[in-house]
Image (cartoon, rainbow, N blue to C red; front, side, top):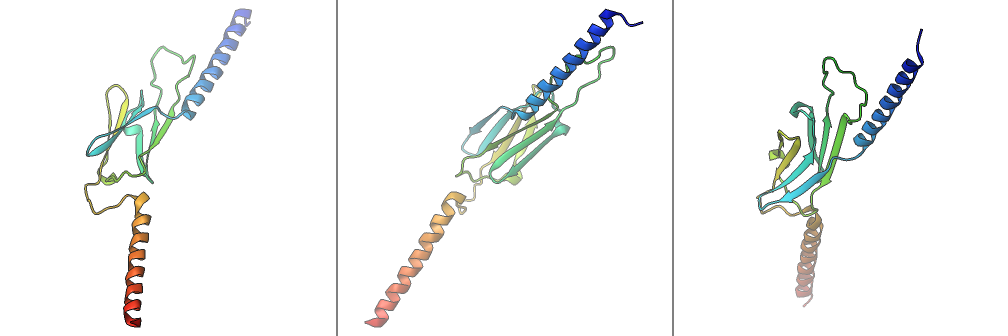
Length: 160
C-alpha cells in the first residue's frame, strides 16, 4: 500500500526533475560567456566552460568567427540519485574577430585550463603582402582605375 507521503514525495521528485531539465535546456541555449583579447601577434578568446573535458571540445574557425562546442557529461556518484539535473550538457559559443583581422588559423591552439576556461589563441598573419578582406575590393578597384587612366593616356598620345 502506498502512503500519502510516498505520493507527495514522488510528485515533488517529478517536478524537481522537470524544472531541472528546463534549467539545463535554457543554459544550453545561452552562448558561453567569452572575452576577446588582442596582442601584437595574436588574438586570444577565452570561453567559460566549467565541467568540460579536453576530449569533449570542438573548436572551429569559419569566416572570421571562432566557434566552440562542448559536450559535458554527468558523472555517476555511487549512492546518489539526481534530483535536479540543472546543468546544460551541450554548450556552445562563438565570437567574430574584428573585420580587419588577418590571422593564421592553421596555427591556432586551444587549451582547457584546470578551472574550466577554454583559451583559443589565433596568431596574426605576419605575411605583410596580405590585405584584409575589407580592403581587398578597394585596392582592386584602384588598380583597375590606374590601368584605365594609363590606357587613356596612350590613346591621347596616339591621337596627337
